[in-house]
Length: 276
Image (cartoon, rainbow, N blue to C red; front, side):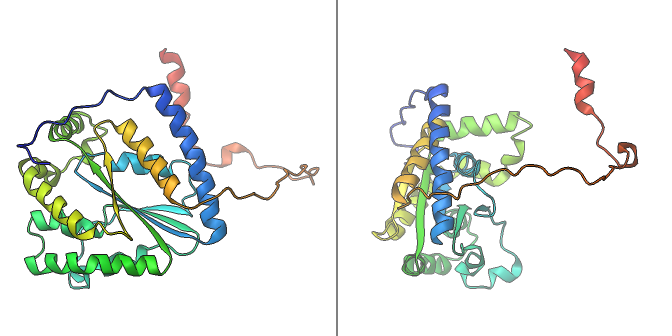
């Protein structure tokens, strides 16, 4: 979408109680999917891309909120080092791919080259063209080897993006999310739009398609994205082994040392009780 296009109609915000109830249900299914991944040795990569402030981070957090970090991990790579800049472009991502029984969620991915690197001239035209040629082949190789790949593009309007930027600027708890590079995306909106269109044209393939997540309303986008992921991964419930909490055996005379000999955190909570 370019700034000259008709403004997107903002959807009515999804009801909070219904959102929380459905999110909890979906997260329960994510836990079951995780057990299926562990039991079958499946490998799953989920790519989260989109505009700055489009809601990628929030969606990722809702996906992993109740998952085992030894099974599902978030990968958010920093800017490449000088050495990494001399490597084959995809090389720095390969070590982060999942082994059997693992889920990897990429908070931005190799598609940096098709977006920010192209728009900000962080790569040469030759490097960019090579990426668009090699990317479908690279993803074909991953899928041929048995890795399941899901690619989500979070879409947000310029007005909603700016509103979220202002919220981050004014909220000290979210200020860290806002960088000069993010603000640059406002003045380069059309350039990013063209880069996205070219990226989708080159890398939206039958074997590794892109799925667009409309993200004007974060609640809707999270529910829609998680439901789609659960629907497209061929998981099934796994019967877990029966567990029984054992009876605690009688003590053998052990005496615990006095608490005073150990360092303990100060009781900050107690200082709050008299402030009501």
